[in-house]
Length: 164
Image (cartoon, rainbow, N blue to C red):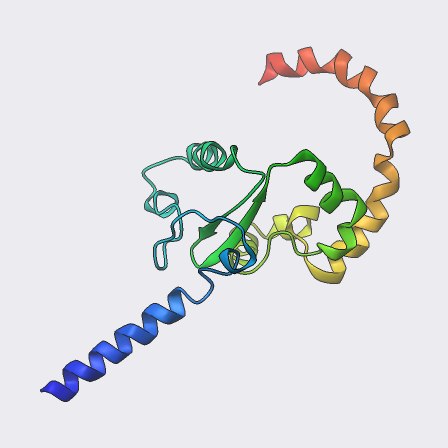
């Protein structure tokens, strides 16, 4: 009887360790993280269906906006949120080739299974596919080209807003 209890306790402990293995990843690097629940991550309401996705996104924003950098967990995966504009520029523009897989792991895999077309978007790509697409698209978004389309956006924006 005691052997079964000990075996069950050991199995429960191993399962818990497996589900929380990635917890603490960013904390060891000195980045604060929101509390995470085993298997459910930092926001269990994301998976209960009781709140809309936009409400969860707003909650994440409210919880992280006061920090330059903060971590939370989606299921068992750590997610790093960067709110500092200079750091975002450094990551997204100057050092983008070092940050290929901005969103990865089970989060992207799950989204791509549900919506296969999203796997072809820049935000759904990872690895070398992302690098190739980013390099191909970067010339289209230079400062000069973006400045030239601001007028068109300003003219069509109000009409587009009426249809929303």
